[in-house]
Length: 503
Image 1: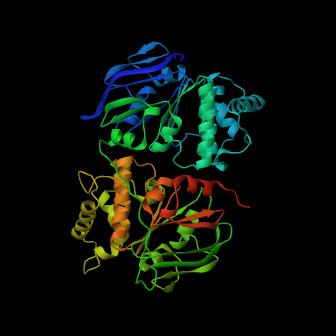
Image 2: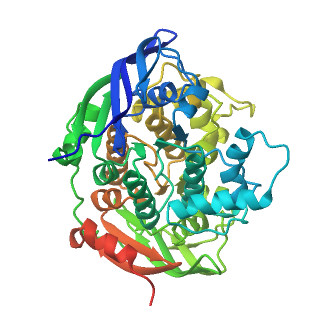
Image 3: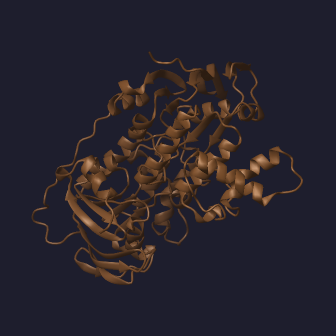
């Protein structure tokens, strides 16, 4: 007989609109004590609005919220915190210049309204909470010096000092490795044993299926349903989220016959502390995947190819000719483009219009015969790429920050495709993007390869690498440890290769 769990949170028939846009329409959600519950939906589905309502930051237009049996029609942030609800957002909201111990203990010290600070007490609080999650860190280390994964542990410990009963985690695995994800999941499972609930928000469906007891799906602001995880699979959950059947197919590996030279060839490329003896080729119409855990050197290799991380030795050939790449401008002129992993900070001028973002890489082409900027040329160039990549926007003048993650990524891709590259390097092309937008981006990438472009995908998402690449290069500690054809490998085999330690 299964013990009935006590209900911790229930939101009933919640509705919320913004200037005529219905963000949520009669959505309900309930979470039991000690339950790991996942909330999924595409970008713009209403997930963030629902989290803000539960945490008391946003007031719903209709509906009620019940926490620990208490009904709230007007929930404030202080009420939510008092009832044991803590939200860990993607930015983690930590103080980088303070120590781990200070970040964990600060809220509790403020709550106690102490006039004098006891450093011993600060450390004791932090030690206690780390002991509760069975982890250890140097509590005197500044937060700015630790990894994203360890910052998450700090954020969890900080939440526990506030007597958290429900911890809401918003996309917690976006920038951490498989090993770090496993560590985070072990902490979440330990919290579950202590009766502490977790609401886990993620785009990574494999993780949703791995960690959760139940899944709530919302689409276009409406509740699709609440499901027991054991009855779901990846395809079913994708369909519930998008309303579409999304089918992926593994690319067949084929040698490129009749091609004398590869588009790109890297020979013995090395940079001290980054990578060593890197050798690989990319042919016309080929998609090459590069994978490895964070810190493996995969991004540093890409930056070197694009002139942002000059190697100490080695050679780069474009169309069989030795290339000297000292800057991104050199790389662009030679036919290389690079899409960075952090689209918000490195890929977009977020407050600028979509049109300006698309043409920023080709400004010289948009000058008239008097060397003045031609707005009509800008409009035509931007309009062409918006239509080509199906960017959904009301206007070219819409700010990039107003778009969904998937549309933002299409704008960044358009910006680089406008340079007419021979080889396109994409670092984390679908980070933080929902399942339907991911499929769309993958189809764009495959379409580029079909037109003869050489493509490099850098990703730690194993399904993305296997389903979208012809060949796979595995990087560990700055070295290539394995080269595989896609039809030779499974997800489990690739995960095993990534998890091995160097001899």
